[in-house]
Length: 370
Image (cartoon, rainbow, N blue to C red; front, side, top):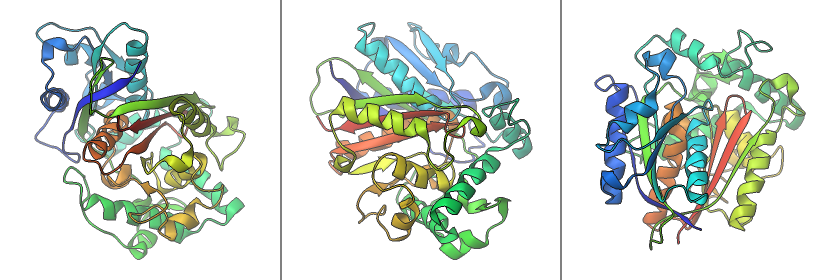
């Protein structure tokens, strides 16, 4: 059975003061239906990805909020897996299709993060870390530990981290939906404020509002992007429980599953959207997914191997760093962005990588032209 992407839609991403949580949710649903030419009454189920609407918006039960968009109130469920919520919602929908429960479903991810203070948002996001073993930590601090370990073991440099941010901002200039459409320099990143050493302000993805949706079907349709393979894996929630701080085991496992299901190798992938919540996260991802040897991801980035003319094009949307990171929507908007590239014939085989927390959850999807 093949799963095809009938249509997709992503809202503008950024500080969207004029739109609320429900506005973004319904905009993405409506847009994806229009772009897929699917009548609303043909949607048999809805999967809603969201990380923290309870803490951020005082609104839970988002599955009901999404279902009421439709006159027939299709069954709906909310999926939460920290920053991997979008990828997990995709997998839940795909498994339902493969099991034959439904033939056409909708996946929508949404997060409205800017209506409360930065301190409150930071506290809400920190709940995705281990609340006993990592109590009081923030994600910049946890990823700073990963960066320090990588720098110590492999000699990864400040310039290599900065080059990751510079590349992604350069890509975002051409993305009209991106939060930050402005090029930056290595010097600017190097000199930006320290958030958690060695990570600086421009190493970190922003707080963002946004939503994205895709319509999936198991029916036989032609000339639509296909989900060729997917993988989902877990690791210890806390860093102390990991076997290594210089590699994310969940990414490696999920990647191997996706490659195997798709029947492809890492070298076959033309472009990827990887989870660059912090610059070190992108460097870890491009190594763990098999494009560069361990310890060489930073050097490859600095040398342009992940840019528009490189060995593999990484985060041509601008990534989380510049496109933005509305957490529940991120894993879905990665799929939507890549599906659009496939439809336009820019690429034929692409990969999406979505992480939760400091790497405890990983979801990988491989898409291809059918």
